[in-house]
Image (cartoon, rainbow, N blue to C red; front, side, top):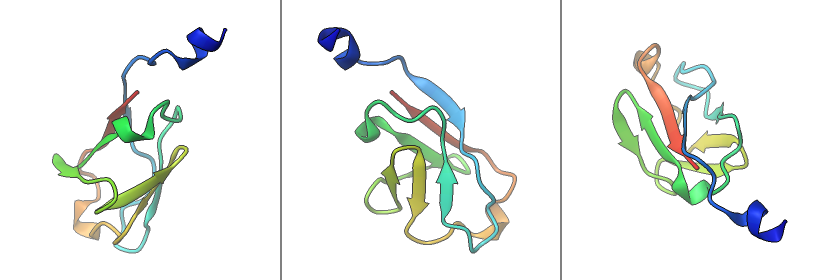
Length: 81
């Protein structure tokens, strides 16, 4: 059981949930990442750097600076284990 619960999980490819409006900094992903360090986040096809552009706790992504409202409707995706 211990071994099974610590094996790497399959990669997830999900849309990030939350409003991009120039003021919102909090977004969510589901399911929660098995390994937060594995998160590869992209906004408008541009990579976002963990610890520089955002932090993550569980399934909550918090941007250091709110994404500009002009990015609304552009791809906001995460890939992770």
